[in-house]
Amino acid sequence: MLNRNAISSGAYLESFDSLPKEILWTQAQIDQSLADTMSRRPDQGDLWVFAYGSLMWNPISEHDKRVVAKLDDWHRSFCIRLIAGRGSPEKPGRMLSLEPGGSTEGVALRIPKATLNDELRILWIREMVTGAYTPTWAPLTFRTGENATGLVFVANPEQAQFEPDAQAKTIAPLMDAASGSLGTNAEYVFKLQRALADCQMRDTYIDELAAELIRLGQRPE
Image 1 (cartoon, rainbow, N blue to C red):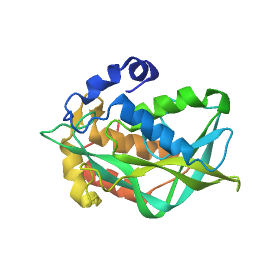
Image 2 (image 1 turned 90 degrees about the vertical axis):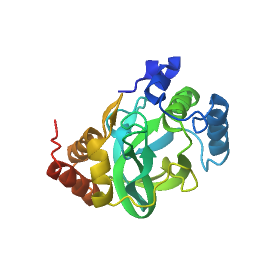
Image 3 (image 1 turned 45 degrees about the vertical axis):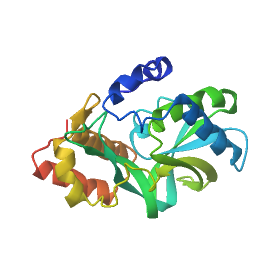
Image 4 (image 1 turned 180 degrees about the vertical axis):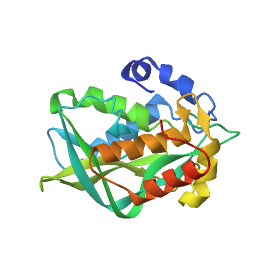
């Protein structure tokens, strides 16, 4: 599992040593992406990050509040080819992102203004290893009915790792065979399904994919 020490020390790169060097982002590219995104931020103060995948159970970045939230106009999609971490070049899996349309339930994590610079840098190093995401500002609706602007990492269809067919029946056989230094691809799906259940949420796409993986012989822990 990725952690703060691994990211801060650079040891996290060992989990991505199978990535072609030409798609691995430099620290300068990561820093520029962060600066560009923050220059477009529509508000100030504390910042909300929308977690819809592994950030739900392993956020790494320190936050002072966590609330259930909904993001409209985007849906979960395993649309990024995965050849490191939970996949390999020989047996690629899929990484989760968001594509346009529908809606997504997840959790919003509030990062205090006082620690924003350090925590966002850790978040960017974690999420933008290859620049496969587009950091986006979007409106969130909390379960309490309150609204806020949140930072969301969505799919970048222009990146070489983007895969347009993310249907469960297409990707389940790939994910069934994929594994790497961070574990199996199937394990990620089951962890996400469990994290959603812990928040009294469901995603039919994740449920369908989990069912396909079980049919192929995978079992949740």
